[in-house]
Amino acid sequence: MNSTMFLFSVQEKYADAFAKNFIIVLLGIIIMSINGMFVWTFFRSSVFYNDPRYILYIHLVINDMLMVFFSVSLNVMAYAWQNVPLPFCATLLIITATTHKNTPLTLAGMAVERYIAICRPLHHHQICTVHRTYILISLIWGVGVLPGLADLILLSIVRPFSVFTTAASCSTSILYSTQYHEIQTRFMNGLYSSVVWVILVFTYCQVVLFAARKSISKGSANKARSTILLHGVQLLLCMLSYITPVMDMFLSPFFPVHRTKITFFNYLITNIMPRLLSPLIYGEFFACKIIIVKIVPSKF
Image (tube, rainbow, N blue to C red):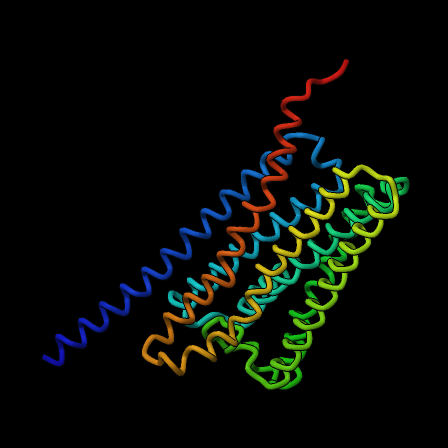
């Protein structure tokens, strides 16, 4: 009887793990397929890759594709590969953390571009050039990678150097488990979130005030306000991942038996689903631009 119960428990465990991984991988494929369609369309026409606004948008799309790919890979590795070499694990975690930070930073850059287009229209083509847009993207990656590098530096300081020759399950909570890492993570998340929200609120208020003072196109002002509000919605979706530890801490004591399921659904809702909704929401604007490009005939 005990053997039968043990076998049933093992089978149930593997079935549960397979179902979780199947759902996450399937959603990851769907997200990357949708985003891949936007990337494919973007590179088909020079109208897009000569426009700073759409360069920033496609950077957001590609960044989210990378984030989903590495995040899903780490989740699958947690079940399939228990002894990951630390250098390889640290590299994956840094890339995932960087792409996670890049999303709100890119949204802030897109909001600033819309602000310049409405409030500084005569200088827009001088300030928002393709070359400067790529410089901004490089800066976004440089700033986004800093927290991951800080985690690695802290690890090398508080742990013996021999730790880099070890292997363990690849997880942030396991690799970066010191109090210093927890403080550093909270500080960085708060700093990045505050800066991005200040930029979004500032640009939105400036567009509203400028539209009220100046006799500009009402349609252009409304579009700019809607776009910046859309960035705010996307940012809220992205910031859901920051509350994952809080939700785990709050719900787990009430349902200790289902702790792993709670963690899984929190990850699904706060990390994967926002990346599914984000391209669908903003993609409407991109799709409209595609339709316009196809309808308007070339002038010779």
